[in-house]
Each structure stands twice: as structure tokens, then as C-alpha cells.
Length: 142
Image 1 (cartoon, one colour):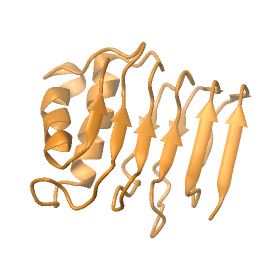
Image 2: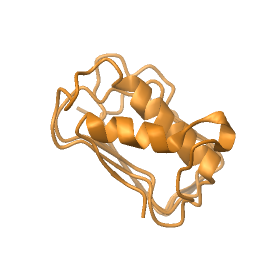
Image 3: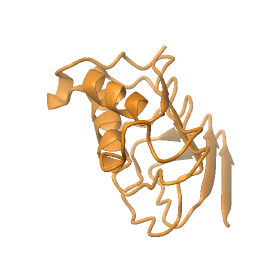
Image 4: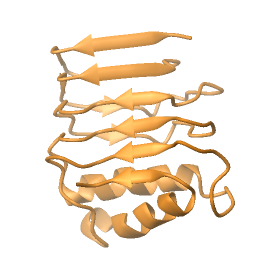
């Protein structure tokens, strides 16, 4: 298991390939891509709280385990950006039954981020949030 801890740095981007636990606090990014194939690695705890990211792509992440989380609270994301992230997260677990296959999963999209809506950026963030919650996720948007 690898661990990356970055606090109060400015990076143009970061490749999180094969990082299992990541905590990034008060880091500023111009682009953060999680599209690197995480393969059999699981998303345990990715925290980008207050990091100023402008692109967060979670399409390569794996939520297939208990007690994993994604925190992008207070990143000043627009409704379109929040919608896309929630949509991508919902797509990752779309094959799970109602109630989900795992417990203790959470997504925190609150703080300075705009609330999701049903159309910004071409994605229905409200439906994605509802879908995630139906799979047992705790999704915070305030």
C-alpha cells in the first residue's frame, strides 16, 4: 500500500497511478486527473478539500470496497463540474444492486462548490446524487 501526503503546495498536475490512499490538503492544482487506470487498487480516501482543482476526473477509480471516500469539498467547483464528478461516480457503481454492495462510502462535494443541478454541463447531478445514495453512499453537498 502506498500513501501520498501533500500539504500546502502548488502543482500544475498530479498523476495518481497506483496510489491507494491519498490525502491532499490545501494543495493548489490547475488540473488533477484520476483517469490513470487504478487497476485492482481501490479508492480508499482521496481528499482534495480546498485544493483549487479545476479538473477532477474519477473515471478510473474503484469504489468496490467498504469505507472509501472522495472529498472535494470547498474546491470552488461550478455546478457543471460537480454534476460531472457525481455522474462519473454514479457510473462507476451503476452495476450494483439497490442498497449497494458495500458500506461506509462517502462523497463530500459541499463547501464552496456549487450545488449540483439537473442540467449544467450536460449532466444531471441531482439524479447522479440520488443514484449514489440509492447505492448506500453518503453524498454531502452543503
